[in-house]
Amino acid sequence: MARVDLDEVRKVYPNGYVGVAGATFEVADGELLVLVGPSGCGKSTLLRMIAGLESISGGTLRIGDRVVNDVAPKDRDIAMVFQSYALYPHMSVAENLAFGLKLRGHDRGTIEARVREAAATLELDQLLDRKPGQLSGGQRQRVALGRALVRNPQVFLLDEPLSNLDAKLRMSMRVEIARLHRQLGATMIYVTHDQIEAMTLGQRIVVLDRGEIQQIDTPMALYERPANLFVATFLGSPAMNVLRGRLAREDGWALALDDGTRLPLAGEAGLREDWAGRELDVGIRPEHLQRAEAGGFAPTVEVVEPVGNEVFVNLRQGAHPLIARLPPGELPQPGAALPLRLDAAHLHVFDAGTGLRLDA
Image (cartoon, rainbow, N blue to C red; front, top):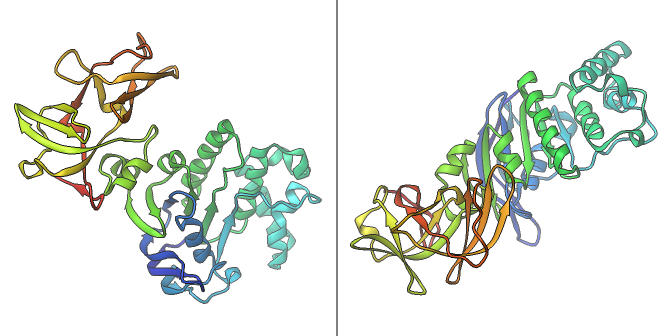
């Protein structure tokens, strides 16, 4: 396996559109790194540049110690798994697994040994004689993974490989990919638009938006300390609540919203005196909107979503929608006021102009 280094890697199209603007990061040898962001953010373009399927407009890309900017895809020693399984329908599972090795001129003994090893790793032993049309979606995706696995590449590149699967299969395949990574110790770069996949799979995550890297960190560091408002609202399900207003300090701290509503804050941990009177975007995760006995505020319940081990309560405070994640129990009723508290220690504060995180 090998590390991958990107130094100011750019993609600019002939019409001037910047697909990727100066990406700089390192994927460590044996790391599973996830590229995540909304559609059009540049994550697949970046992966395709690493694969050699897109030309690089600027910067330097290294795989191991070799600069590969102008190296053909077949000579980069990478294997790619796509969103579509791209299996040959007329070939058996064994033939699909072996096809790439045959093209590269490996001898029959090597091919059979690698196919057997990959099939055992992915639990495809009993399916080797079947055609793709006889397989489930999850089995086809395992064959696509196996076709990459038999190559023993330096780097695995996975481009939204689970997008075509239903929710249950996506969950089981996430576990499969994580298990495979631990077993192989392989260097993997994984692209997804699904932030749940990113959070559960990635050892580190690169968050992109409009071709620019927004933040690179571990999943929990991104969740607990997002660098800007985009990262804060993109990662997390349900998304972070965001209220725009001004912090005021009279009899304790409060958030004064633009409609004149004043929301009292419990405590003052993490707040700064020089923030008072400044327009801010203040975020709070749904799990940190807690029921209050007194001294809080009481938004109106609109929709209640019980999902078993927790309850999502959609609320409205004036013109501002909110969502709270509450433990199961007696459910609030739509139309009722639900007393809640905003704990200052759990607030995320962002500059209203730049969207950048402000720290105490």
